[in-house]
Image 1 (cartoon, helix red, strand yellow):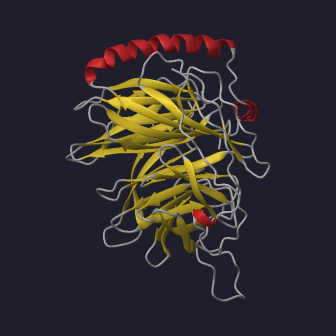
Image 2: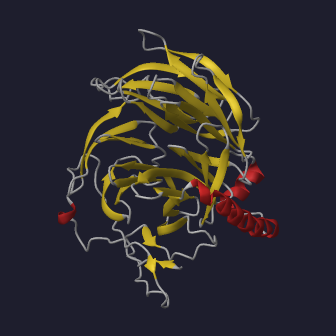
Image 3: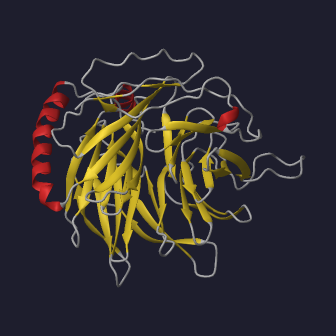
Amino acid sequence: MEYYSNQRTLWDFIDEEERNPIPLDQMSESDPQFSPSRPSSASMIQLSPPSPDSPWTLSPLHPSSSPSLLYHCVAALHRHEGNILSIAVLRGIVFTGSESSCIRVWRQPECVERGNVKAKSGEVRALLAYGNILFTTHKDYKVRVWNVSVSENFRYKKITTLPRRSSFPLFSRTSSHQHKDCISCLAYYHSEGLLYTGSWDRMVKAWRVSDKKCVDSFVAHEDNVNAIVVNQEDGCVFTCSSDGSVKIWRRVYGESSHTLTMTLKFQPSPVNALALSWSPSSCYLYSGSSDGFINFWEKEKVSGRFNHGGFLQGHRFGVLCLVAVERLVFSGSEDTTIRVWRREEGSCFHVCLAVLDGHSGPVRCLAACPEMEKVVMGFLVYSASLDRTFRVWRVKVFPGETKVNLEESQRIDQKSKIMEYETSPVLSPSWVERKLHGNPLH
């Protein structure tokens, strides 16, 4: 079955950061539309030319090469200039951050644009959404906190900037609590209202959102901090770095400071991504590294220690992003694919259910959320690649009895993919540049 989309334009609004939120019904020009793909046996629909002011157009969707009906790509967006660097999902809407200062807001699942959030500084490398709050990181090494409304008309209002600017104009505009390099990752501890920021300056900072103060700051690694996650059950903080290590931190009882409790180092290459899968009966930590492996650790119920349980092997190049939802793990890689892994109930055994193939460059960031289904488990997966495309996938996980058939179809598909890789191993200009200069792929 083939899937196509209508191609429309998305207007690039130029606003100042302090501007009042704009409801969609007051936007100038025609409202941008984004229609979901639909089956078609006719020829390709005529695509209207993009507006010269828009950084986005819709891309045609190509048929899936997989014989399985496990997934399909709902829609695809192409950004003319700059890469999509971050994705966040919140109550029916999706946020995307890029190298520009405009954060786009889309409606699930068809991705009709609902508005945008405009800041003074761009390069939004990390996004985090919780409740009615959106946290964003920017090129000026600061975090902006927004109140967003996802009712009929999308609205937003900036609450604060972390760190706050000094109220004394004679003092330096750079706060002593400010990061000294790019803020690469965010995590939020819900019960305590603590926001954690990880940076390429090797530091991790903890911010108390209620009074907008930095309550702790510590050197976490010997190289860039690439990802950070928090266990909402006990407040443990997990960080990973280009130095090849994963570390576990815990707040000192009765204080704001943090202490290192464990270092997990089973990979010699940089660790780019983390994901935590928690349930009342189990807790698993996943890390994706530049050697293409996904290591995982299981938490002991009695001691609380994390024991190495093995690794997931399948990606040909580095793993750049991870998302865990229930017993599923989604991994995005330099090899342009997204893999869907499932952990079997009551064991450490994992199986690769599907390989989502559609991007032509390294998959840099992912987001996923469950979609209610009666018979199967449904998920919406959002992916952004260094090919400047943003894709929406609908994934349906069938009952266990279909696992063997799915695995067999994936083995057949992978054989053809391996042949393709062998004839053309270079997948993107970014991958070439990284391999030639030995720089990490950010």
